[in-house]
Picture 1 (cartoon, rainbow, N blue to C red):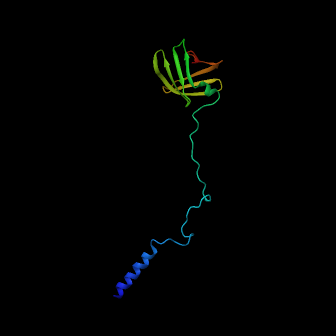
Picture 2 (cartoon, rainbow, N blue to C red):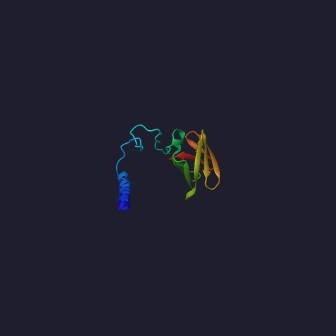
Picture 3 (cartoon, helix red, strand yellow):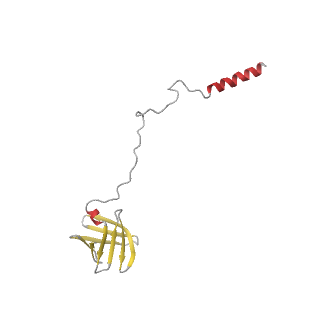
Length: 130
C-alpha cells in the first residue's frame, strides 16, 4: 500500500505541473507589441517593369514599311519581330544606351540601331513608331 500511495503521489506531482500557467513571465518569452530586439523584415517588392525616359518612349510597336519589318518592344526589356509576313520571326531582349539601341536576339544575333530624330535606323531599315 505504501508503494501504491507513493506512486500516486509521484504521478500527481508530475501531473500538477502540467497544464497550469506559469506565474513567472520571465520563464517563457512572449511577444510584446512594438518592442523586439530583431528588426522586422519589410516585404520585398519587385522592381517596376515600366521603364522611364527614352526607354518608355521605345515601348510599343515600330514599323519599317520599306523592309516590311515590325518590332514590338515590351516594357520588360524584350522584343518580338515580324519580318516580311513571318509573324514572331525573331525575339529577344533590347538594351538602350543613349542613342544606341541593341536588339539581342534569342538566335544569337545582335542588331544595332541608332536614333535619327524620332526614328531608329538599322541596316535593315528605319523603324518609326506606330
